[in-house]
Image 1: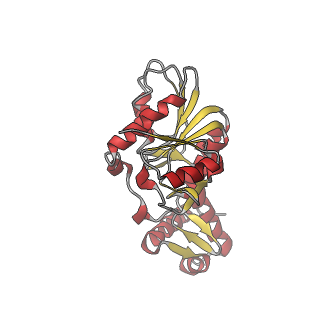
Image 2 (image 1 turned 135 degrees about the horizontal axis):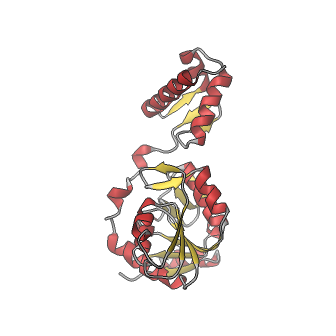
Image 3 (image 1 turned 90 degrees about the horizontal axis):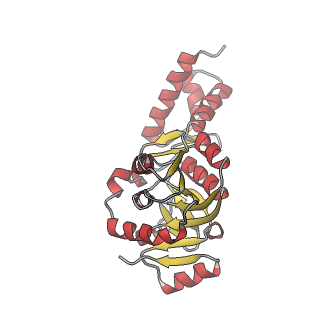
Length: 257
């Protein structure tokens, strides 16, 4: 019978190793713990389900490059005027009675500040969006819970994805860490990217809210391509990039600051 105490200790040690060297091999762990490969793989699978690592062929790695993660509390004030303008421009896509998803992020949280008096339903996985709208008398609020990812203050993983699979949204207001004209949208965490994919799947329209500083910044986790995006609302885009995205069927809105 599996010893739950030893299992917990092994998992803590695995995470310590990953923090120190960013990746680990099954073979290395079997020798370290003097257990079978089956036992080690079970520990790694459990940690992956919790969003704490990513399984690789023969081992595991950290779910993100922590040096690339900008903690949300540090990014909320960055390019604040541009983000606010983007969200004001995005209001044109919201009508009374709509069901909308507001994704987590330093841009999308500004949208929550603008919709508090609207008669709409908001579905979100963002702690900050929840805080903004929890006292609204007109917004019906549905929160998708799950694993709390502290850098983005967002709930993610299977529980959050399950909630998004149970609903239909008229519009998703999507946030990403970076976007590329050729390669599409990315973020820094693979579990978070998977949660975003469930949002996209269950929305009639997808509106990407991203300021121009995120252009051509690429991160480890693929979110989607431009075929999944209906509108891009940003503060600046070159004419040649507008033409390329228009050819992909993406509507472009340039917000004035």
